[in-house]
Length: 345
Image 1: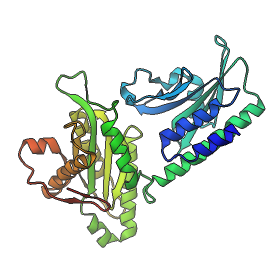
Image 2: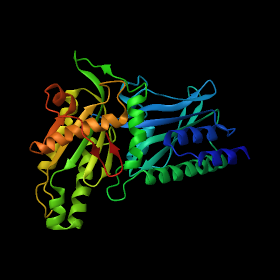
Image 3: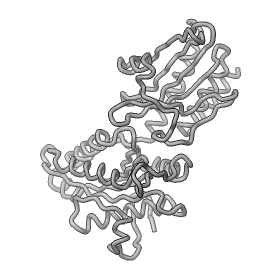
Image 4: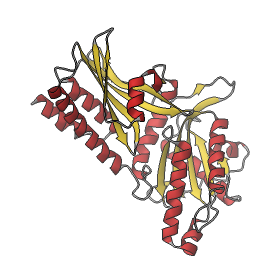
């Protein structure tokens, strides 16, 4: 009965992290389970890294608030060869035994869009999981997985598969307010690392729709979305904000790094052969999220949008940074910036 109550509580969650904590709590109720963790995976510089995001500590579940790249607990996935092999062969689960501690470990990767961002780890001391225990574990995991899929589907744009507008506020709030995402200094003096917010817009997109029709316009949106995924991968968050506008939340990096990756993407789009349409260009504006601790998420979006507006009004097909434009006195008086679903002042 207690397990059923936990399952009911689990399916009442509307947030991925709370759902993750809920499934780990449910698994801990099983008499065979002695330890659980949710492991987060992220590719960095072409290599897959892993770190515990939620785990048991002194009988309680705790979650980290440190951003991935600064987490001292992260390590390359190849340090766990059994799990690495499991993911390479796209398996649904794998197990290992540590003779030194006589611990049996079961890994359950959460496959979404043929990728794994989270893997549930379950441990048992002294004996291997038997068939009945596995059935119960896998049943609970399947409920969790199905509900994760539903949450993921509700957060996606139907055309491009990118995160949608309604999930943006929560992601930006976390990025700007969580302690683990505060500004820190990198090895280069005078080069603080911080998250960045970028807004990009497809230049002259109305002409594409008017000249070639909405089917080719939709194809351009899908192809730009695919380029965004391939260039920014899982390390950054990508949203379709509405129409031909997209928003990026970049993981902590220096301003020079942010400029480099955004300019690299601009060039990638410029040189991509779009079927029938030919050349397509984009304009981008971006702003730092740590410039002023009193700046609200709405103001941050307005700043990035103001930089985008400047880029479009001054030639298009370029990347502009809000703080640089402001320092040079190139920004005019504050204007109302209107989006499909929100009006920013």
